[in-house]
Structure formats: C-alpha cells, structure tokens
Length: 115
Picture 1 (cartoon, helix red, strand yellow):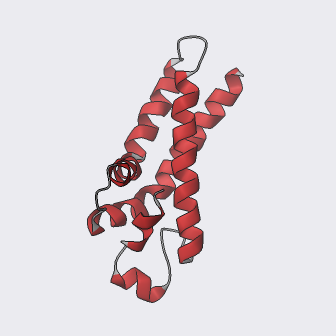
Picture 2 (cartoon, rainbow, N blue to C red):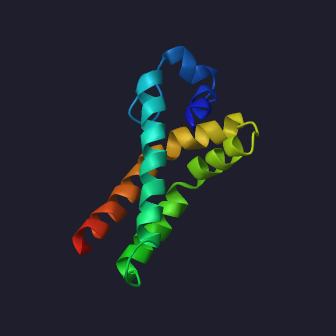
C-alpha cells in the first residue's frame, strides 16, 4: 500500500541506493515501510479491541505511536484517496519510519503484558 512512497524519496538517495536511517536497499526499505505500516495499524486495532479501559501506559504508548507514525498514516490516507504522495512526505517517512516502528513495538510489548 505505502510502497509507492518509497519511490518518492529523492534523487540523491536513489543514486546512492540507500534508504532510511539503516541505509537499506530499495526493496528492503519498501518492505520495512509496509511492515511498519501494518504493525502500527494492528496495534491501533488491538487497543480498540481491549476488553477493559486501557491503562495510562498503553494510552501514552498509543499517543506516542500515532505521533511517530503521522507521516506514514498521512501517506496511507493519501494513497487510499487516490492522491499523490509528495517528495517531502516521502522524505519524512524515510526519516521517521524507525521511530514509528519503535513506538509500535513499545505499545506491542505493553499489550502483550496484559494478555
């Protein structure tokens, strides 16, 4: 879904063949973006499906994840609406996907503790 965003990361990056903070190949970074997008979506769903009111730690982690994943979610919304993803948005995703992943995994750990 978000794979098209990776293409928009800019000429300098494309010439070097490295993407994201971990200097991944195009295919590896594209897969990572997809995986992180799916992870953070599944964490949002998991919070919504909790049987009881979420703890303050879970709510804090969820808010941090939403903030860290804002660019990725913006791209997902734009893609679903059939809109283009700008070069600047693609660059923001490239810079923030690591923090988005960390935030989603932190929430995942808290959710696993209550299950």
